[in-house]
Amino acid sequence: DTAVSQTPKYLVTQMGNDKSIKCEQNLGHDTMYWYKQDSKKFLKIMFSYNNKELIINETVPNRFSPKSPDKAHLNLHINSLELGDSAVYFCASSLKQGNEAFFGQGTRLTVV
Amino acid sequence: GDSVTQMEGPVTLSEEAFLTINCTYTATGYPSLFWYVQYPGEGLQLLLKATKADDKGSNKGFEATYRKETTSFHLEKGSVQVSDSAVYFCALPTDSWGKFQFGAGTQVVVTP
Image 1 (spheres, rainbow over the protein chains, first blue to last red):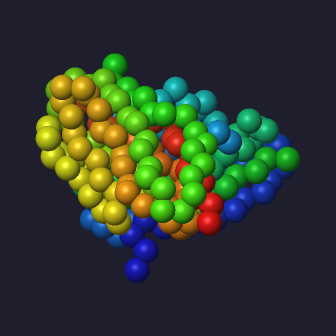
Image 2: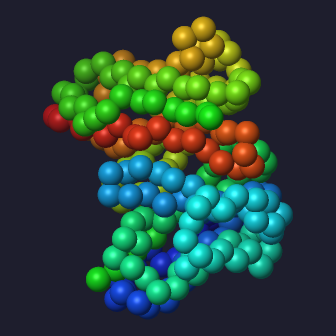
Image 3: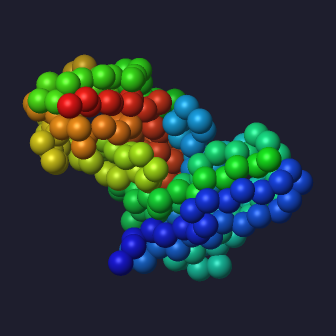
């Protein structure tokens, strides 16, 4: 039973399109995140939610809009996709601040 | 602010060789420290952790000791296998809610 699952695993789309990535965790965690991993494997946090409330928005363009309908879900919607958005996006969750984070398998987004 | 510095890769080793990946940190207080591993095409998995100074985390033959005096958390394995080929990340949770500071990642390649 997958702890943190995100869909789709691969996403290829054209510039200017709008797309969404979904994430669900069945661990009962309070905190969920979105991280972006670039081609050099560098990981950067984008958003952090705690109990459905946005806690961190790390200078991400407002084309990116997270939504947390409940504690177990954190979706990421991206408007007007650009070439530079191509990356691997990871969803993660943790029980509370300071605890280890559990990661999903990642969504490889390719904008052409 | 809190930060993590880890040695650059790639690190190329023969099977059964000794592996060390250096990690040093700057942090407010004494946070838990983590090593994550990312196998090709997969998400990050927690490899080991240490929650306080002088703690030793261990898993799958890997070890790391939380050294407060040298602000280090170096990862070691005595005899690597081809299956250990992956990218390894040192990480610490920061003061901000849910924000993990990751090192740049060290790619390890083990050859038969």
